[in-house]
Each structure stands twice: as structure tokens, then as C-alpha cells.
Image 1 (spheres, rainbow, N blue to C red):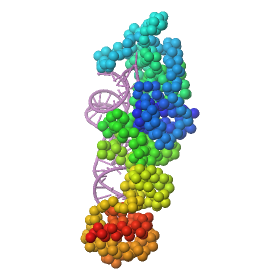
Image 2 (tube, rainbow, N blue to C red):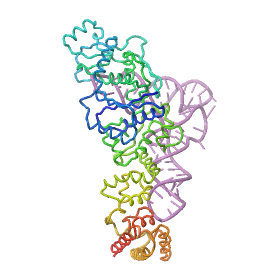
Image 3 (cartoon, rainbow, N blue to C red):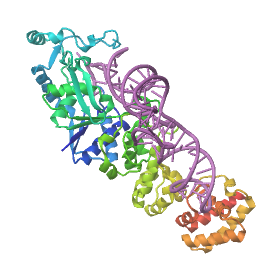
Image 4 (cartoon, helix red, strand yellow):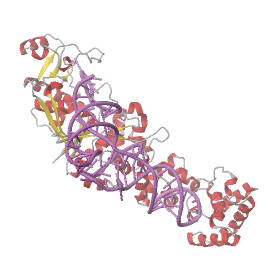
Length: 478
RNA sequence: GGCGCUAUCGUCUAGGGGUUAGGACGUGAGAUUCUCAAUCUUAAAACCCGGGUUCGAUUCCCGGUAGCGCUACCA
């Protein structure tokens, strides 16, 4: 039974790259009947914030994908330290008494020397113990095997076989001079201890993985399988970052803009993975059914946002499709908070009647209030009376139509078929095309030219309101 | 600088020694229609460059270039 983990560091909001990593882990777990572990990698006390923890949980809760076990790395600190010393006792690590680097990292000239700190590696156990005893500060470093032909290798599910000469891997730190474990140690120990079988994570860890397999060896633990995911990058090519790109990369931004989680997930899955057929609109069960790490590709994917439009057009399009796939009642329920936020408080029955009229006209939930406000406003916002006049008509004609409509609507039952028949008859009687006759009425009633189909709109609005608005429109024309 | 990864329409991608290089988004045109949408049809749009291997490379190999990543006692 596979066990996978998602291990975010709470140093900022949950961003779309992390979300995708979570999703791929989740899909792999669910596809293989495995276990999903959530682990908060919160060892960096300096940069961790509660707000970030909050944001991560908020984002994941919105996605609606669950996990089976939950851990906090900071609660396992003693375990990590003990693990480091076990590695030391097994001869895979040594104390390095060299003072920590003082800032400047531009050491391109010191080629070779960076691999390890000369001398320290060869210090006798006695001397090492004595200096430690004397209180001299030190870091604990991994003793990377040296010598001709020594290589470190692993097989990545996405990038295939990876091999690196051990001589190109530096003696990296396991414990800092303050005694605290580094990320690499904590992460690997936890992965081993939690019996993680597959590590699925961003490709930015691909080269770190060589160090990780070394740590697993020091831990006397068989390394898990690895799968590295291509990175999500911004249109400028840089790795998506909270720092550079701001809230457009935050999952909650998508939520607040009215994306459906299933659409967002669908979109993210298509970045670096595809089902090998021409389907693009996919439900979560559909994706789960066919998800394979082997179908993950190896090149970075651009999330195509701009200053003008913070969302990738494809994401928006997919959201529109998912919106339309939703049962009306579900969509209505999703819409409520967006109307509330816009200051409209639609009666539930009325909103339920409006939803089908706007469903094909919005791509984001947040677009709904602007598309349907006239259904709920007592008074129409001001509009240009010129809009009442159709293309090849004039004010007199518009007024004629509206006057006539007044009497027709007063006398017609307010259902779709009756209105259809009555208004078409009216148009014919006036010698006008349907479009010409309907525009004045639509604008009078909706306050704008582009709106849902007329008869349905009238029905939902109700006779009284329609007549009132037409009266107002006539007044505007005078 | 070193090491690694990657390279197909603007973007996401399929494909693969011989194809009209396929799909999707976006863009243009048209159909439908009471407007706008939705829907349907359609057009324009791509194999980074140079060498090999081969009868034939966009595909395989090598090199270059570019982008990205790693190169911390950050994660």
C-alpha cells in the first residue's frame, strides 16, 4: 500500500504550485488505494507564521481533498536529533568545527574546496569528542563517500534514472551549530519513519535527491520511490513565487474569484500531466481513475496570467464548463455568498429562478452579481436612454414599442409561452422584427442591452416590476 | 562558475524515423438566435540552431544556444 505525503512549509500562503503537488500526491494515493499523509514542515521558526498555516489549511479545505494522517515536524525535533547522532555513530557523519560561512556565497573560485571542509572530515574521533566536550561549536556533516567511480543513483518515476558522481556532492550539513536539524535530515528521517513509499514533489528537489538517498543510507533505511514534478512558472519564465508574483499565485485568490475547486483541480492537473487522449474537461473521479506518474511530463509549464487578467484563460474556460455541469441547485448554493458579498440579498426562490438564466453567461461565480443584479435591485442603476433605441429605429419608435408593450404585458399571463406569443404578435403588428421590438423592452427592464433571454427574464421579474420599469423608460425617452 | 533538467502553434499539450504534425484555450470569420452568452463549423498559428546516423529526421546521437532548478549551518 503506497504512502505519500504533502509536506508544506508554513512560510506563506498556499500557492498554486504547492496545491498541484498536493493534488498529484492525492491522486496517486487515491488511484492506488494508498494513504495520504499531511506533514507540516515547520522547523524554520524564523519564517513560520500562524497566518501561513491558516492559509494552507484554508486552501486545502477549499480544494476538498482529504488526507488520512497528520503530523507536525516541530513536534518531532528530538527524533530528528537522535537520528542525526545515529548517523554519526554509524560513521556516516562527522563534526565540522569550521565557523559558519560569513555571508558572501560568491565562491566560484574555490572550486573543489566547497565539497567538504578540509581536515575536519579526517579528524579523529578522540579529537572530535574532546573539542565538542570543550564546548567548541560545530555542525554535523554527512560524510559523502569519496573516490573514483563512486556514484549516487536513484530512479525517478518521471525523470527516469538519475546518476551523479559522489565527488560532485558536498558534505552537506545534518545538524546546525545550534544543534538543530536541517531540512534535509528532518525531511528524510520523517519520510523514513512515517514509512513513506513515494515522494512526489517539485522538480526543484531533483538534485537534492542525491543527498537524500545518502541520508536514507545513513539511516539504514531503504529509500522510497521518487517522482519529481515539472515546475509551474510565470509568463516571465521564473518559478512561481509568492514574493515576485503576489496574490495571483495564491489558491485563496482563485477561491475568492469564484473558481470551483473541481475546475481549479482540473486545470492544475493539465499542467504537466495529461490523460493521453483528447479529453480536457475531466472530473476528479475521472482523473483519479487514469492518473499515472508515468504520464507526467518533464518540462515546466507556464501559468498564463497577466497584469490585466490574473487568471489563465484556460482555467477560466474550464471553470465555465464545470459551472454548467453543476446541478442548478448546487450552482445556486455556490452563488449565494457572491451575491451577499456584492451587497445583494436575493430571496432563495428567486435566485433559484435566476441561476438557469445566467449559468451560460458566467465563467466565474464572481461574475454572477454583475450579470444578474437587475433581478434583485429595487431600482435600476442609471442607464443611457439611447440604449432603448434599436439599431435602425428612433426614439419615437422605441416609445411606441414600449407603450404597446405596456398594454400587452398588462393583459398577458406571465409565463414563457404566453409572453413569447404575445410579444411576437406585437412585433408583427408594428411591422418590426423581433430583435427591434425586443430591445427597448429588454433595456427598459434590465437596464442594459446584453441580458438573458427576454421572456424568461420577464417571467422572473414579474408583471408589476416590468410595467414599472417600462413606465420609467418611457419617461426617460421624453 | 559547477552540476542537473528541459526545449512541438502566443499558452497548455498529443505524437513520433516517411503524418495534410493532432487536440484544447485564446484570436479571426461564419452558422444559429430576441441581445449577450452557450453551441456548431471554419481560418491563421509550432517541431530552438548546427552537425551527424539514415534512402529519409521534427522524432535517434553529439554539440551549441536558451530557459529553469540546485549549488547554505533556508525550506
